[in-house]
Each structure stands twice: as C-alpha cells, then as structure tokens.
Length: 249
Ligand code: ADP
Ligand code: MG
Image 1 (cartoon, helix red, strand yellow):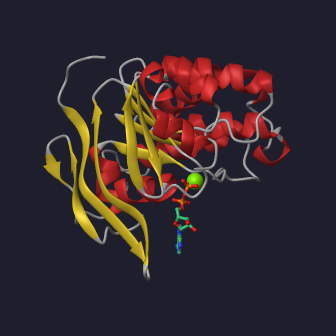
Image 2: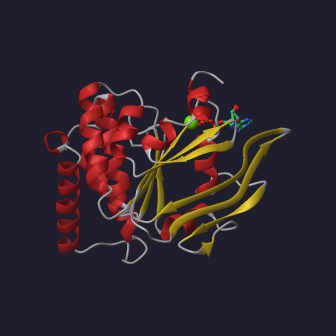
C-alpha cells in the first residue's frame, strides 16, 4: 500500500436518525491512490457513511477532511468540485438519451465551470471524441447510439460509471458497483475499476467478497455503525469479529 497522506479522513464521524445511531464514532483514513473497500453486513451503516463523506447527509458529530482540508460544513456541490465524486447505488442515467448523449451531458457539466455555455464547433468535436473514448473504456463502444433505457442492467451501470468518470474525479466513491450484475459483467466491471483506480483513489462498498479480495489495497469492516476491523483482505478475513459479523453476529 502506498505510504501517502490520507486523501479522505473521517474523525469521530457519527450520524443518528432519531434515537438510532447508524454511524458511530468512525475514524477512517483512505490513502491517496489506493482502492479501499468498505464491507459489512446489511444495515452496518456503509451507505450512511458514504452519504456523510459526500455531505448528502450532515453528520451529528465528528469531522471530515478531504486533502487535509476540513470539509465538514461544505455543501455537496463544492465537495464535488474539489474532486470527490460518488456514483449512486441506484442508477442515475437519463433513460431517454443515448449512451453517447449521457456522457456528453456529463462532460459539458464539468466544463460549465471553466467554459462559456455556448461551445465552438472545435470544442463540440473534442467533447464528442472524449465521450466516444469514455464509452470505449467502459466497453460500450458498440452501444453509443442506444438509448440508456434499452441497455441491459450491467451496461447501464457501465454507462453510469462513464458519466461519473466524465467528471474526472480524483476520488471516486462507488456504492455496490457490482450489485445485480451477472458473472460476465462483474468480471468486466472489476477490470474497469482496476484500470480506473490507476492514478485515482477509489472508496467502494461491495458485497462480492471475491471482488473485494481481488481489487482492494485496504479494507474497513463496519458492523452496527462501528469499525470492527481494518487491513488487507488476508488480515480482515482472519479476524474473529469479522467472521462472527458475517455469520450474523
Ligand atoms: P448499509 O448500507 O450498510 O446496508 P445503511 O447505511 O443503509 O446500511 O443503514 C444503516 C442503518 O441506518 C440501518 O439500520 C438503516 O435502517 C438506518 N437508516 C439509514 N438511513 C436512514 C434514514 N434516513 N432514517 C432512518 N434510519 C435510517
Ligand atoms: Mg447500502
């Protein structure tokens, strides 16, 4: 694992829903350039923790640092601009647009910050080429003109990843990227995550432990809102608390 400073750090992060504490005093460090997996039984607080890190939910306590900067009170859109982008567990592509149009919209959203809304022909050509390259990198080159609503489930997820990559994030949060996929799509998505992870930081929630073992540099295990183990796959899978948690403990 690269010995770099943490790019994301949570300190004492806590979130209550009424009297129920879904995330409890979590101290998490995600190192730059690593693929870091967050695992744990259903209801452990993984999605809540993701929502806190991207500020889709406000913490009840604790703080969040991104690249050493305290972002605890920052708005989600501003955090995204700093380079922390998440993709959602529920697919978020525009169903009536083609795969190519979906990626183009995301590319244009990124460039709105720096360019006038009206684009020159040269810029439009470059955006078109960039959209095609992104579609190719996620294995959708032959589906570029297909409406998103007509894509298979696995390909829809691949398109979702392409639209997320279009934002050129430095850190990518993936909530169950393989959920609902068949073996073939899982293999292709794992390869994709590996290549996307080259030069970026990825924090992912994933249930498929084979994929987690294969891809992750570091793993954090949550149970009932608390971290019960951290380390490599070999380390956490040998941990007796983790074994108990996965047997329903
Ligand atoms: P995971 O993603 O690990 O399956 P979640 O973070 O979705 O777990 O949920 C953790 C716990 O918090 C669950 O018991 C869930 O019912 C509860 N929870 C999540 N979101 C809310 C909410 N908006 N209101 C009340 N309880 C919630
Ligand atoms: Mg979840």
